[in-house]
Amino acid sequence: MKKSKITLYSLTIALFTIIFLLMINILSIQFNNKLSPTSNITSSVSLNSNNLYRDSYYIKNSKRPTHLYVILQDSLLSSEKAMISTLQGIVNNHCTSQIYTLSSSEPDYKIWLND
Image (cartoon, rainbow, N blue to C red; front, side, top):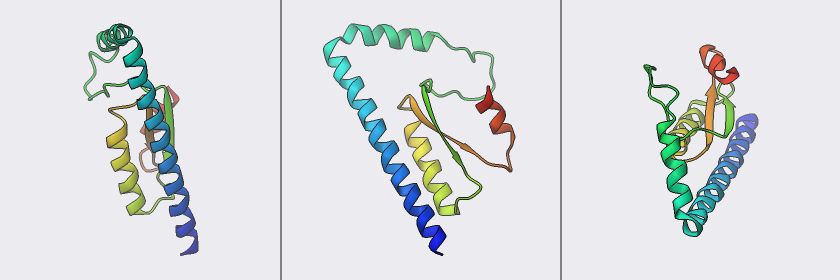
């Protein structure tokens, strides 16, 4: 039981750290938009037109990640997995810092990460 409390505490700290970093990222984007709105329009147009996965059969995120926080699910409790999956769904479509989960039961996910 003590190990799960430590793991939950560590995950909580990691969660708040990720949220803090994402908030800084969002605030810096908003600050840059106020300074030079035309540069952001140009970059968003080029980002949307640069669809490398046009012939793909899976749904691609609207934001390309620049930083990935990789979390191994094997040692997590089911409640922790739900928390990470929820946070992943909230964060990944809005930020360039994204969460990626790995599981030994699904080794194909590691192939994408290695690419």
